[in-house]
Length: 318
Length: 294
Image (cartoon, rainbow over the protein chains, first blue to last red):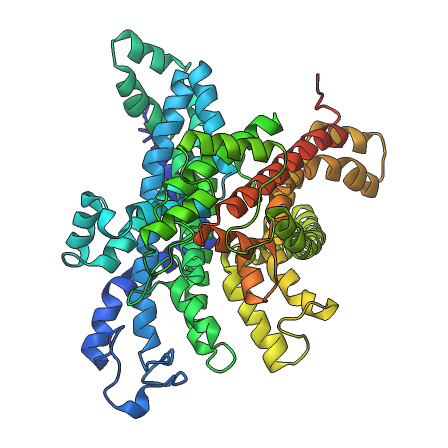
């Protein structure tokens, strides 16, 4: 009797294969990868090829004006004659970093908060979730403004200054402000994540493997973070992928209001906001950053949806 | 439950405004100490913080938020009631439009699952979710006002309302379409729909009387917070289309540290949200007879 060896597929491999079958999700993934590479190496390539950088104002005074898209400037130039393509790529760095760093911050807070509330349960859980309810009804913009003004300028915590110094030079006030913004946005986007994780933990905590862990003397901390959280990873990843576009949108919105990224730095949101002022005469100033941002958010949303279907085929709804 | 929650929200908001450095009277120049002391006395800022908190709470409980610090001589209640109608008008119109588009698209997509209609409306919905409204609004203005001359870019008139309402509705229509599609797909597979068909009801009755009632429950849950957010005004649309709504006033009041106005608007919003959520909870019982309240 010939025995065939059936090789089991791991959950993650299975999910990956399901994801690859979803054309829209693959499209999203490709766009994200290309966009990430473009913003990382793009500004450098443009500088080598043409000499334009995001803050290069042409020496020739007749060029210090907004030129429509040409072969030399595929996206045109802005009021100061700066190449918009270089600015969009440079701005993309900040926009994508907002997405990643703020989501990581919200992930750390939301997962710990939700996991502790769900595992401890009882009155503690009740209180912790009530706090989430209350925070939901305070406009997040108020919290962001307060965080930015309390920790802004000379009051920026040292570790944020160190982080921004590692990224782009010591004592860069503008960059400190941007990193502060990343953390402030993370601090207001963890509420839904906490709810998602709590729900997962509640349904997991009475299973046998948790009882076994407890019986063998694993600490509460170990049970929560080594046994429960890894098992709730699927929904966490899905929700994190959907948090990225939403924090990017929030950053853009704050920059639009003039509270977010400040010049000389730029993000897609602040570029589009600057372009809106001139939309009637120089529409390219707003269209290119706006469309680049929309394309990225579109791809991220498709990827997030695809991941949800791939990781959780039972609740497949779309 | 609404009242204590609202009071807690107000307390936290008050604390947040107080924690933030800076104040409403210092702009660029520092004031002479004597002047600053007079201002503090006038607004009761020289008292210890717990007394200030007590006075503030006592006034709030009586529904009196006092006068704005920035817009002198205007009470907070006056300001809210003057700007709220603008936000409410575009908010309600946008939500009605979003419901019409979203429900239709969602139902069609769910009935013809995996057809061209389904993919079309799903992609369109995703597009609606991904285009930021500060991009969509100016683009619409560019095309319909500056290029085609069909609609005015910013005017408080029927024609002038079209663009802001469409801009505002886009993202909500997209959400509703997705929620409706997901809800309908689940409901149309359930046992009670099979029973309805087995009774010999025609497909139209099954869909509209039985399917839709259960399928739109997720949309109803979404309606509470969405409508509250819309009524409260949406800053971007108000800014792009120069509408004097509540959203902009709120942002300005936060930036100006106009404490009474911030507190008034936050209290107004949180009560609005909670009332809508309550209405939503009540309406579940009518939509799904299986949901009962003790």
